[in-house]
Amino acid sequence: MRLRDYMHINVWLLPILLVLIPVILILFGSAFMTTPSTYYMTILNEGWSVKHGDFEVENAALKNLDIGTANTNDIVVISRLIPKEEVPSACLMFRSIQAAVTATIDGKVIYSYGDDYALRGELIPKHFNVIPLGNISEVGGKRITITFRVYEDNAFSGLSEVYYGNRNDVELAYIQKKRLPFFIGGFLTLFAFLLLTLSSYLYMYHGHDLSLIFSSIISFVLGAYNLAFNDIFCFISDNEVYFCLLEYVTLYSVPFAIITFLVSSHPELNTILNKTLIAINALFPIITLALHLFKVVHINNFVSTLHIIALSEAIMILPQLVLNVAKRYNEQKKSLEFTPRTSDSVLVLGLVIFIICSVVDIIKYNIFKFFVAGGEVSVDINFMTIGALCFVLCLFVFYFYHGIEHINSIYMKEHLEGLAYTDSLTGLMNRAKCMQYMASVQGNFALISLDMDNLKTVNDSLGHQEGDRMLSSFADILKQTFAGSALIGRTGGDEFLIAIENPVKGTCEKLIDDLRSRIKTFNQTEKSFNLSTSCGFAYSNEVSEKDANSVFVLADNRMYEEKESHHASKIDRFVNDIIGSSLHGKGGEADHA
Image (cartoon, rainbow, N blue to C red; front, side):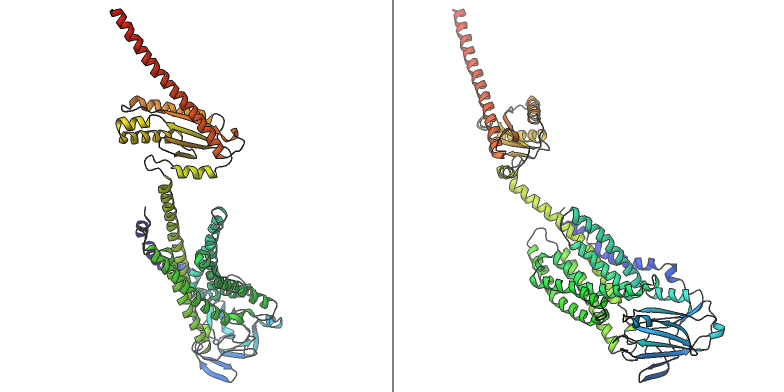
């Protein structure tokens, strides 16, 4: 099937995938993700007293509060009255970013977090603080004060929502709120492991294409970063330091994964500039992690640097890719196999969507962090999340279409080679292919040289059309007799060559006997002409040089010996017929006389 027709049949794949995403998301809304709170649960947004340096406000809403950017040694204090609603296992839950936390009720410390990290000079990871309140009848209506002690510059610029209610309910409410990144991040991570398994197998057994491996890395870093940024790991593990590092390392690895994939899948992008960018992108997460582990500079301080690097590389790489795709598109338009939907066009579409979505979230993050009330705690990366999903799905479609194109190119190559190396009349390999085979064959092999008899006689007496039919009939018998041989070729007008690899003793003799038997059967039904052939064969172990030419010379000489024997036999029969006729005539005359 031609590529254009195949693409036309399968053009529905991408729309179906895009429709399938929201369907899965709807189905993903299981009871766990949609069940309302079992007990009372609310978000305590109103009624807070907030103090940050010279900034101080009473009875404020946290969500829209502009407290400025919290830097090293800053102290942010928030307080309000505890609700009086009775809730089993009541608690407060809120997120802190790179800050130590202390909570008191009427001056009595009931909770603390993060000071041990600060004493060791380590980065305080993001943390979901869950403060158990005990018996609400005893603490309801009392004032709770939460103090944030900041140990990083630009640590945060807004205050997290504070959940109040049963612990299971508040955790479930947060996870339900993050269902989109939870699903997409989980899907991308699992998809990465599937791709890695497939790519490892293909790399080991079917070539050295690394692009599929790098696509699995893309899927993993995007999925893991999505889960880490949205704090999903905080609810399944207590190892916050590891997941904090995972968030930054995966974020810093995104440019490396993308550019290495593009270069490995598009050889025209394998330039010195792009190799340099790959080296920079590979070193960036390694160096930043090393600086963090050796407590030189904490890893969170390089986010703005990454933004600059990523945007700069997008400006450099994307035009190269688009120009190369356009160039290839224009070249393919001249081909009979042209189709407007190519694997590269799908890949470029996914990459453009991802870059646009990422740029939107980068701009949004910086605007919210430094210029908008509520700070970056109000920021999500939903655009980047959806862009990452689209990009990975486009990668999947890219490989789907790329596989079709690869199969088609192999088919076209074989077809063109067939035209170049196939004898048009008989369908056997032509002289050029036979010579090519003779120049490359090694090891244990045998050659059979054949000369079909009486072709000139048939051409002269019955015409070339019958001569062509004679050649075709003989070629069909050769195909049947020597099926599975390494080569069945026509080297000249009535000359043929058979090559057999790894023969055992007696192989050629048995095949030639079979050939003669098939020719005899054919002659019993053919009325216009009779087939016959002279054969000679030789094994590679019969000659000292072990090269194909020497083996062929030996086989050809034996063929001519048999041909001479056939010729002598024909002359003897002709002479006998003449002499017999003469004697018969003379005897008749004598008798008659």
